[in-house]
Amino acid sequence: MLKLYGYKKCGTCRKAEKFFQQINVKYTFVDITENPPTPEELVDIAKLANAPLKKLFNTSGVQYRELKIKAQLPTLSDLEILALLAGNGRLIKRPLVTDGKKATVGFKEESFVEVWC
Image 1 (cartoon, helix red, strand yellow):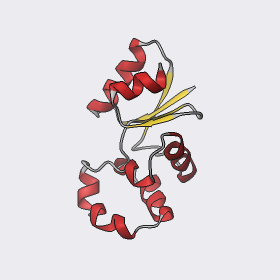
Image 2 (image 1 turned 60 degrees about the horizontal axis):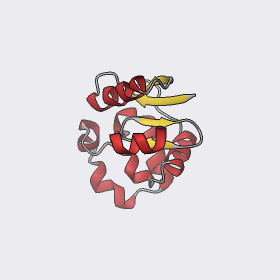
Image 3 (image 1 turned 30 degrees about the vertical axis):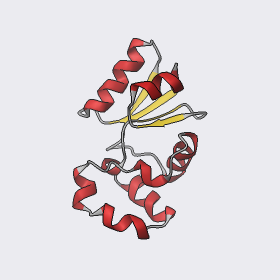
């Protein structure tokens, strides 16, 4: 089954949920702030979405700015990136959607149509 990591107050996550409801696709919603993906899940999602780990950061988020992640990124190892992301769901770009065989990071309707329809 499809797993959607999101945040109920996030407009982009609501768009993703609406998309799946319109095409009648069932999914499990996981609150990314309470239950962020594990480092292993993040690695899998990044690979399936064909995205580098650095692209999993929510660069427009308050936490990203407050923790000055942008300045740290060039020197962070993959393990450090995974520890940051898995330890703070607010740092993760959302929604993350995966079925274990494919994944998307963020919401772009064209990408969702291509991957999930």
